Length: 337
Length: 212
Image (cartoon, rainbow over all chains, first blue to last red; front, side):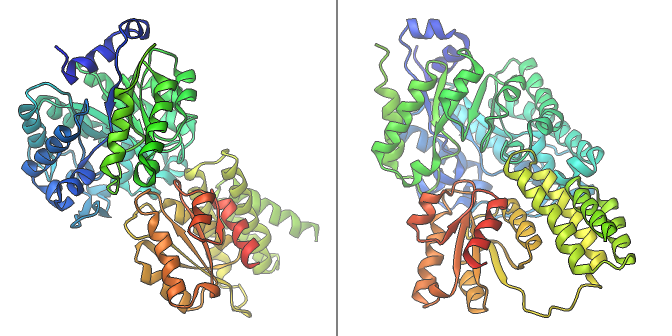
C-alpha cells in the first residue's frame, strides 16, 4: 500500500539511513489552506470560514487537483481567540480582523459548540470520510503564546513579558487549558493537531523569552498529543535561526521552518529530525515556475530524506497554479543516485 | 552643569533599562532643577530610545523590550509635555501606515516610536490603509510616507501607492520609504521607492538621510 498516509508514517518512523537505502521519494505538501483554496475554487473566503461543507469541499478539491501528501484545515489565526471571547470581524474575502481582545472576560471554549470551532471539527470529519483514511488531516491549533497574545492584545501581551510576567503567565495558562481541550476534540474528529505559533517568532521575541514563555506551554500540548497516540508538528513564522534547538525541545515530530536556510537547519538539528519547508512564499506568488523548482530542489538537496518538501508558510492567494505544480514536480523528479 | 549632564544620562539609561517609574521620577527632578524640557526630551528620553534602537538592530533587544522602553519613554514625555515650548517651528511630518489587506502593525508601531523619538511628527494612518489615504496624506503636506507590509500578497499595494502618487502629480513632493519582513532593498528599488529599512533603527537613519 502506498497511500499518502503510509508514506508519512514511513517518513516519521524510519531512520534517514533506512529511507536512503530504500530510495524513498519525498513527501510533499504546498501548505494550501482556506484563503488559497477559496481563490482557487472561485468562492469567497468568508464562505469557507463559516460553512464546514464549503471548507471541506474546497480543501478536498485542491488535494485532488494537485495530489499532494497532506491536508491542512486552517481558516485563520483568530478562530480559538474568538471562541474564548475576543471580538473579531469576518470580511468577505480577506482574513478576519481582531476588533477587541477578550482580556479579563476570556473563558475556556467548548469546541463542540462555541463560535466557529464546530465548523473546523465538522470539516475535519468530512475530510476524513472523503479521503477514506488515506491521508492525514492536519488541523491547525495555535500555540499558547500566540493565543495568549490574541486574548490580551498582541502589543500589551508582549510588553507584559517585561513589565508584568505574572499577567502574561495568566493568559498563557488559560490559552494552554483551552488548547488541551481543543486538541482532544480535533483528535476525536479524526484530525492531527498541528501547532502554529507565529507570535513566538524569532523576529519578535528572544530565545530566552521563548524558553520561558513559549516552550513550556508548547511542551504541554505536545505531551498531551503524544499521550493520545499521535504525532504533531510545530510551525513558527519568520526567522527562527536562534530558536531551532528550542523548537526541537518542544517535542513535535515535524518542525516547519519559514525563513531559515534548510542547509543551516539540517546542520543544527541533525539528520533524524523531520523538517518541513521551505520554498519562499514571495517566490510562489511572484516567481517563475523555474525559480520555484530551483528553490524546491535546493530544499531537497539540503534536507532530504527526513523532509516534507513544503512552502515556507501558507501558499499565498495570488500563487499561479503552475508554481504549485513546479514545487510538486521537483519532489517527483527527485532521484537518489 | 555637571548635574544636568548626569541627570540626562541617567534618564537615557532608565529608558534603556525600561524602568518606567525611574523615568518619571528623573523627568520630575529634571524640571525641578530647571533643565529645559526640550533638552530633557532630546538628550534624555530620545537618546534612550536611540540606544534601544541600536540594541534592537543588533538583536540584544527584541520587540517586548522596545515596547516596554517606549512605554517608559511616553510616561516621561507626559511629565515634560506641559513644559515643552509651543511648537515654534512646524515639525516635519511623516505619515506611516500598513498597506491595504495587511493588518500586522507591530512593526509599524515600533517604527513610529523610533521616528517620533527622533523628533518627527507622525501621522499614523493605521493598518489596512487604502491607497487613497496615503495619497491624501501627501496632499496634506507630509514630507515622507512610510509603508509597511508583512505579507507577500500585500506587497504589491506599495507599488500601487507609488503609481497613484505619480498619476496625481505628487510623486516629486514626497519621499517614499518601505519596510516589513518580506520587503528587501531590491523590491524597494524595483517599485521605485526612495528608501528601504530592514528595521526601525535603520528606518530613522533612512528618513534622516532622505529629508534631514
